[in-house]
Image (cartoon, rainbow, N blue to C red):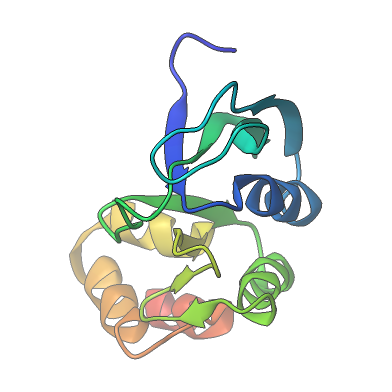
Length: 157
């Protein structure tokens, strides 16, 4: 386990979530699974308590903590994509697995974790600043899943 790890709270299905992430995102995998050594609030002896997993190189722990807390949009994974094909693949995988689309490249998986599926061209436009950033940002505001061709056209003016 790494010294600094993101811990995500799940009700009871951290292992299922980790397996989905490992199957969906490159450089992602499921590591150690820890089982509850005794009963605890929201859980039972022997159930999956924690799952170590990696999402595109980022170390995470999934904690099955019961219903005391819910996921929030205040935390999200921002995944930078290289083209429309990668954007479509990742967005569609999350939505097809009982996820929910949102606005401006955001979506939520079936466990309530928020994802920003963000094409690199959009980030480059924002970094460029000025009119290019304004045009790209304005175009993005009308989107759910980001359309790379529309962002590129907005960047050019």
